[in-house]
Length: 186
Image (cartoon, rainbow, N blue to C red; front, side, top):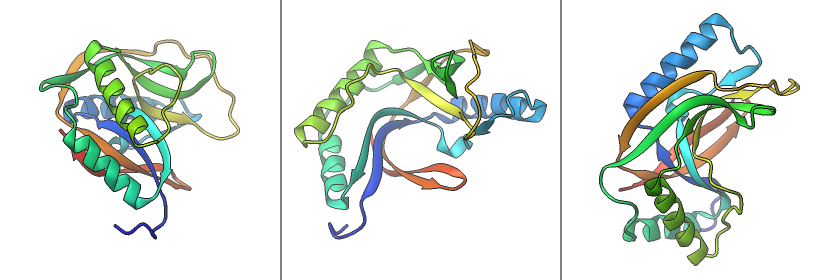
């Protein structure tokens, strides 16, 4: 990569394990087929992820430094898992701009979030100052639609192992955001 290339919109996240992705896709398909949430645009299965840290626009050389630093750091431990609780309105039930699979903030997930945040700080990159609320976005409210009140709409109650975190590139298109794994770190 050369530093003269266009900046990349990036974040650090967890690729959703295939067993969980399949379960979420089936639930979304049921809602889409029944037209239960017509004001939401559904996220494609290949774009499911759990965001640890949104970074924003970075030059390719800085992305490469981030990847190298993440690969050289001991992050988490083997047998990491995501514990899903339910599908909820997000960020709040009163302003449900998203439908999301809510994940439990386990000590393990908090540690991974803290460790990756520390690496961002060491590289002089921004770290969000708001509380970490792990979730997987499943649907986004379409523009010009009112946010409905959405409480818990489905129980998930499952634990899913994952092995990698990843640096993702986010690409904004007229059809919505799409994500590409730039590097996996395990």
